[in-house]
Amino acid sequence: MTDQPTTYRIEFGPAWPVPPITVDFADRNAAARTVAEHAIPHLRPVLKEKGRPELADCFFQIDRDLTVGQFMWLSLAGEKAAQFCPARLTPHHHRGDPMTNQPTAQWTDIDPKDATSINLSERLDITAPLNENGERCPWPWEPQQLVGAPLGQYRCPYCMAMVMAGMPHLDYAPEERTLTRENADEVAEWVGGRRAGGAYELVAFDQFGETFYAKPGDVIHRDGYGEFTIRPATP
Image 1: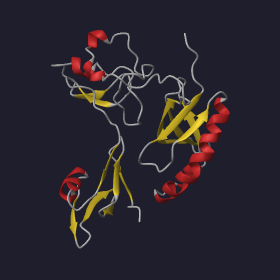
Image 2 (image 1 turned 60 degrees about the vertical axis):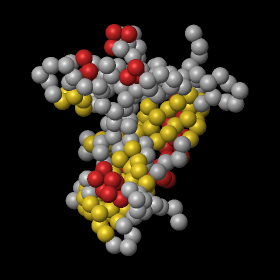
Image 3 (image 1 turned 120 degrees about the horizontal axis):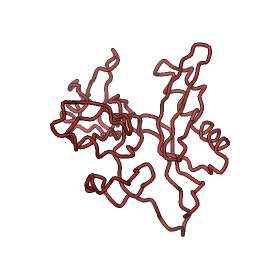
């Protein structure tokens, strides 16, 4: 049995402009504080833009196995809570260390009968579909086996993602596309929006009662919940 690594690289959801960071988790409480101190200055303007500046008073929460994390805000007086900015943790290997736990197999290539003892939260050498929070599904082979079951859409009991009975587990991995003049029609359809015309070949889409405009060079992110955000083109 090998010892669990203590140094991890943390990558944050693409809808949140937080640079990756590598942290030593030998002391998990100290590591969580380090992550929060690194991320909150980047989160603060986004939260203010979303109309929730109070969420910047938050802490970084990780799972027991050091595979995923997220930021948590609690209002004890109002008995409210919010979770946001999901993150993925991967063991960090120093130069010269053997590279282990790198995905070398696709989960879709494994037959359910051969996966009974597999836990994809631990088997990082196998890809896994993500749920809406950006978390790996530990065992995504159930939905595809329910052919003919009168369920339709239901929540995966292993990761709580919305899936469809009889079909492979959906993957809610975030996606991003860079808008160009050549792909404006394609991107407009992807975001459920429209071409806005004009000299800048804008694409417009409506979300949360507001209209957002993207221009060529802008990067449009879609998170696991289907929410779109625009990262302006670099001058």
